[in-house]
Amino acid sequence: MNDVERVLTVTNQLGEGSIWHPDDGALYWVDIDERKIFRFYPSTEKLESFDVSTRVTALAMRASGGFITATDQGLAYWDAQTRELSFISDPEADKPSVRFNDGAVDRQGRFWAGSMNEVDFATPDGSLYRLDPDGSIHTMEVETTVSNGIGWSPDNATMYFTDSMRQVILVYDYDSATGAISNRRPFAQVSEEGVLPDGLTVDSEGFVWSAQWGGGNVTRYDPNGAVDRVIRLPAQQITCPAFGGENLDELYITSAWTGLSQEEREKQPLAGALFRIKVGVKGLAEPKFAG
Image (tube, rainbow, N blue to C red; front, side):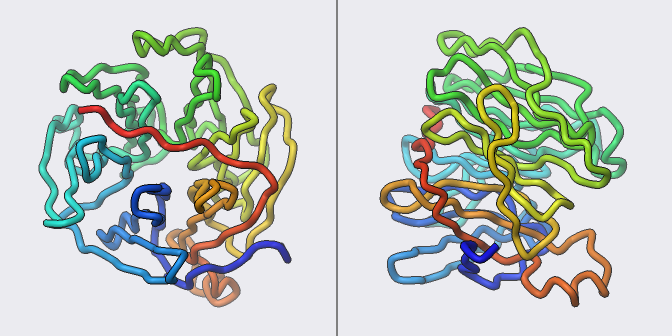
């Protein structure tokens, strides 16, 4: 824990979805429950926050500018200049207890986003969707619990997807040309009671970094799913890792205080803070949505 730096004591209720924007030289992330988007410039230590009209649950860059987002009202574009959301579609509109959760863009410019039942997290009402640049939406996975961390191997041969309440990170064979996934199988299973794999990122060596909600750590898995390294943090609800900095060699980590009792919050004054650590490996540049 000595190597972990507290960057900002932002006390996010549900900090999530961190992503490094190289054009801005800034880290973006969300506080889902507080309906805020944050932007942090490490070079100047300037922090900005933007109020949004609904709960934004995931952010990804858009090639034409701005961002594509997952929200509790479906998929939407967000303009950082006007600070407005423009809604695209909501394939979960007929399920009032189901909302989108995590999302990511593949290297062909497609946006992937998963959903969850927020009334009963264990109910497998979630799905995984793929939004193509032409605007078409495809259902890629069904009957998930809390859909979470999504990522791809450096060679584009495999895709990772987290089903949190089942405590598993899944891996698929990935067809980068068509966006098809197949041969679903477990990649890493978390066995500790009350610890759930949350957001993830893949580094330049093909290792997977998974935030462990309830476990107070980020775990690095090798390409075969074996634990390679565990980074302990001074907060229990760890949500999302993202490589950032000019050289993509700094791991930023968001956290939350939701789900903690008052006594637990008092014992964890840094719950909800933004952390950073140099881990000796570089991340991969985040792609931009091509639509």
